[in-house]
Image (tube, rainbow, N blue to C red; front, side, top):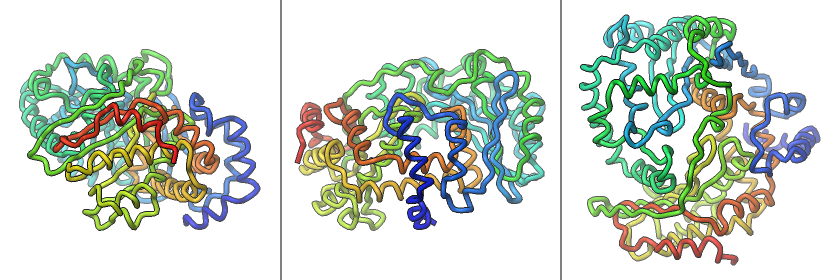
Length: 495
């Protein structure tokens, strides 16, 4: 399929789309948000996608009078997925109640004023449905994967769980032990630890720098009143999206939404999530967590990037693929990679893993490279090489590198539109919260192909060249590079 996409992307119709996108400056203006669906509606019909996607039904959106959004994306099959996405997570917390959003997520499964936990679990088991939930920094999601004739029950049950939970003190106290165990598990996952430290030092004066689970002390002391206050403040109509995917009727889901969520209070206008956030403050800095019980060094080098709705985000995503990745534990040494960075570091044997990352949010992002090595004397040259490769994007990117990155990003995009129902559901909910709409596959492909080598260099210069990095090291940090040297290498390399 991908080869067909690459060949078809040379059509004259596609060139017209690219020309219009570039005229509107979507690809090059970092301040320009994703356009509305109407902006590209007349052009999308000409985009040469494969039939599997070109003829796929478009998303339908209805906004209830109180601001609750209902979004459906139909797909032929015997199953459906429905979910409620709420534009609030750990970012809406403070140091005193950090962890309350995640704690609430757990409590919703403990029973309602009508049914206990056992009765809810039995209902889902009999129906053959799967109920899941998770909390992120900017939103909380509750989803149900069910048979096509079980949508009404699933929506009714999700509404009951979210809006009529008992939140008994006994259940709260019992659940503390479960969450404390989860915290211990997360702390033993070194990758999670690295990314938590990355956020903590980059956004130290913001809710974005808080962890999702909260501290041990907070988990032990979060009160029922704090949970109720969080619900009151953030479980509001304009922050809520009901999403359906699979064999599902839009009109039927709208009726279910009106029945179950139409009574919720509206506290503001429906807007993209970024317009609801408190301004975030970024600090270039570094943190080192010495722990000799950890084998080697797990580190990360990051920079502040644009918001997920920025036109520059496509370029940031392409930069990740240009940099490349490898992991020798998976039998993929970097010397066999087509990426300059992965190939060179792999040849030198400086690292066991190289992994570009991007943590995107409604009004900012963190992007960079995570690495794992033995923490030995090659650590400083490894970090310098990563910085050199990132800075290289400011002035030297080849057409071949960009074409390879585009094909890889397209493959990733396809999975967001034609993958597992629950995964697609997640993307629909997330994008609706972020952009207040669901961009089409045609638009995303057009955006990718509109990016030029010049765009990559411009974006790299804006977000990497002579900018303040954030550095994190966990484990053996003795050879970790000094921050002042790292800062120098953001502008000194022009080889």
